[in-house]
Length: 183
Length: 170
Image 1 (cartoon, rainbow over the protein chains, first blue to last red):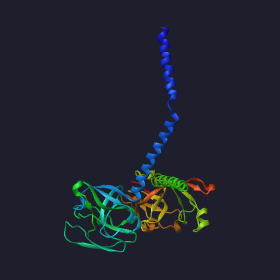
Image 2 (image 1 turned 45 degrees about the horizontal axis):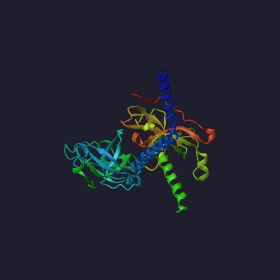
Image 3 (image 1 turned 120 degrees about the vertical axis):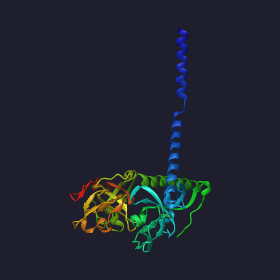
Image 4 (image 1 turned 120 degrees about the horizontal axis):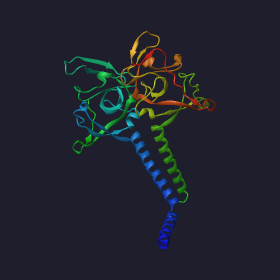
């Protein structure tokens, strides 16, 4: 009995000794360094995504034939909206004025001061209307005028809603290519 | 090389600090220095120019509300101007989407459209707000002003002031 007891005691003592020898301080420091590194990487991704270039998933019928119905991944650059160098014909990503949690892709058809003529209801006749885009606003429309909710319904949108310019399709592989300006 | 190392180290450190700073100010909370009189007496005026900046209020703007765009009537919010995307305004949120509201100085009732809100300055005479440019899209909102953090004697929470009889929620 006593030998078994002493064996257990020596085992426990050994475990305690080994536990004591674990370099806790170094482990803690290294864990902290790793965490900082991960945070730094996350911040770097955020900054690049917000100020330089990011990607967005766009789907729906409104931008046919430029963007596929089932969805394409597009690369979005943030520089030209920030510098105010958007041009007529660019495809932009913007927060929907009707629902701020939704992001939509449309083509810019008029900048501030431009006169835009559009068909009121392309499915029914050719009645058209001309509006002048007010200061600080843009006129956006989907490429598929038959199935797009855009400035024809909700009017010109403030420039501040624009999140970026989609310039390139990156996925799926067979669709890869630049998104050009088109009128 | 020996003289370059401390410089390199310093640059790396400041880059890291900038990365963290920009991310936090973009995603979680930031500070604004306010100019203009449109929100007095809630915020004090600062005159433009160097010493004036130090006299005006500096406020804390939180951005967690942008996750779900959950606001309450009476909140003070910061938003991009609908007519100039480089300028930001701070005004009080009066009405939310779906609310019926009487337009000031008229007897017209306006229903705030989906995804929009109505903002007004506290100082009615000197404020360029929804009374001029109409309801603004919620997508322009950049955050909610929660506290005054400078100058020290004015450190306080920014109170909600729920507006008035003229707004009816539906």
